[in-house]
Image (cartoon, rainbow, N blue to C red):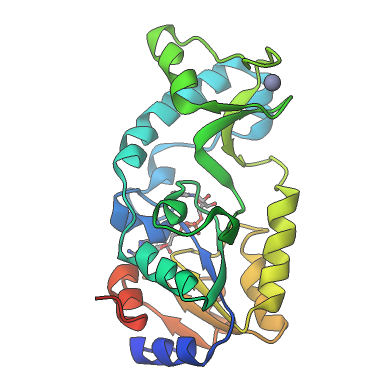
Length: 250
Ligand code: NAD
Ligand code: ZN
C-alpha cells in the first residue's frame, strides 16, 4: 500500500514495540554515499571478498587504500534528521532496537545506547584481529600504512590478519547480532525498514520474518524495493524530512 507521512505517524502511535531496520540510505543525508544509487560505491569499486583478503597481501593493501579514501567522508559525517528521529523513538521507549546494515556507527553517535544497535555487517570505525579479537584503532593501522603501505600486525598476537570490524562479502555473519536481530524481528509489532534496497541477504530476510510473525511492515525508501509487496505501508520519500515529520521532531 502506498502511503503518506500521516499514516506512518498513526502506525507509530498505535505500535507498542517498533523495530527499525536501516540501510545505507539512512546515512546519505550525512554525506556517506550508498552502494546502489548512481555515484554510489559500486560505481567505483568492485567488492573484495573475504577469501581474497585472507589469501592475498595485495588484496589487503587494496582494502586499506580504499579504507583511507572512504574514511575521509566517514570521519566528517554526523547524524542527520533520520538518525535523530530514530533515536528519539528509542529514547521514548517506543522502539526496542535498531537492526542496521550500516557500518558507520552513526546510530550510536546520535545517542542510541550500544545495546540497542544490532550491527549485522559490523563497524568500520575500528579494527579487530581475526585471530585473537584484539581491538585496534583505525589510527594505529592507517598511520603506518600511509607511510609505506606497511600492513598491520596485531599488537597482541602478531597476526597479520587485522581487519576493520566489518563483515565482508563471503565472510560469515556474526552469530550474536544475527540471533538478537531474529528475536527483535519476532517481537516487533511494527517493523520499519528504512533506506535499504532490501537485496542483501541474509539481512533482508528480517523484514519478511517480522511480517510473517504478525508485525506490520513499513518500508520507507526513495525508490521501490524488492519487498514492497509484503509491506502494509510503502513510503517513497526522502528519509530525514518524512521520518522527522512522522515522529514530530522540531
Ligand atoms: P543500498 O545502497 O543497496 O540501498 C540504499 C537505498 O536507500 C536505495 O534504494 C536508495 O534509493 C535509498 N536512499 C538513499 N538515500 C535516501 C534518502 N535520503 N531517502 C530515501 N531513500 C534513500 O544499501 P543497503 O540496502 O544498505 O545495502 C548495501 C550494503 O551496503 C549494506 O550491507 C551496508 O553494509 C553497506 N553500506 C553501508 C554504508 C554505511 O554504513 N553508511 C554505506 C554504503 C554501504
Ligand atoms: Zn591478535
